[in-house]
Image: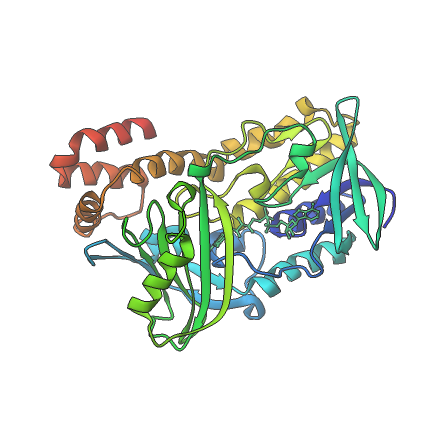
Length: 398
Ligand SMILES: Cc1cc2nc3c(=O)[nH]c(=O)nc-3n(C[C@H](O)[C@H](O)[C@H](O)COP(=O)(O)OP(=O)(O)OC[C@H]3O[C@@H](n4cnc5c(N)ncnc54)[C@H](O)[C@@H]3O)c2cc1C
């Protein structure tokens, strides 16, 4: 590990890998440090990603695709089913990945392009001089060393501490942190081409249960519930066990993971002097689905390019790096996060009766092409009892 790079990337997830690759492809020196001993493990993800989104950055490869998904199904609390064909389901169809291999592939691509990569290398503090982030103190091979950089990219995920060390408030309110548990299950009866989402306050308060196939009789079966609904005897895993006993009593659990997903708004500003925050570290997962693989890839790639541009111009101050913040906020991804945040805030107010009404009425809606606003407009038509609240939602969406 050298003591100086143009760009230092903290975290070897999809955001960090894309950032380092973009930086070296733009002619910079870059280094990824990853605290875990292996890239991609343990997996803390249901591994679903939209086809169109993924292929923006990488050609699908059977080595890291566990299942191809052609549709999605939403199950209402009363058992009513809403089936979404690919054009309606949007990002909910595409692929279920094998992230152990996928994340490695992304880091390999960054390494092949010229980035240095170090595992079991943990940032333990930021180097900040005169208000400018100048790199990190890194624990590696039993000793601590300074690794300096013109731009540091915090890609350290939902548990991110790096930005906090730089003086930025990154706290996630408990109510906006979904606590998640997931089993990888085998020997279960599923449709291998369909992702299924179960809603309801009994099933998953302020969240949902997902079944994401990973082959013929194998799936990620997981749950996210609001942090504020979690407590002794009613944690995410308790709800998941109840669900599994009911739906897959004969299934075998071969892996358990737990983790958190932020469903808050993104950080108010995702750059500082000498620092760019990407992916989960910037709180950029989708507030409805919790999905963040694409968002991390998109912002990582953008961050690497902006870092190169600013270093080239000799200005890495917050104002210069702010083009990164503006660009993602104005992007389709940024707009979707803002819109979905408002929808999520509305959805968590719904009791099961209203969820049933909405899901069952959505079955009757015919749309040529999916659009959130058209959907809300149609839901207003079909749910006169919820007229006022749905109109307020429509207004907030603009
Ligand atoms: C249960 C669950 C299910 C999910 N399901 C989906 C899904 O189906 N689809 C989807 O799109 N998204 C899903 N997500 C979200 C998705 O996993 C994340 O949004 C995505 O991984 C974000 O990528 P990232 O690169 O920002 O962060 P991460 O992938 O979290 O990578 C951050 C990396 O930084 C490393 N790191 C942290 N601190 C340090 C440090 N101090 N020094 C060095 N390295 C450090 C970590 O070890 C980690 O490898 C899910 C999340 C959870 C918890």
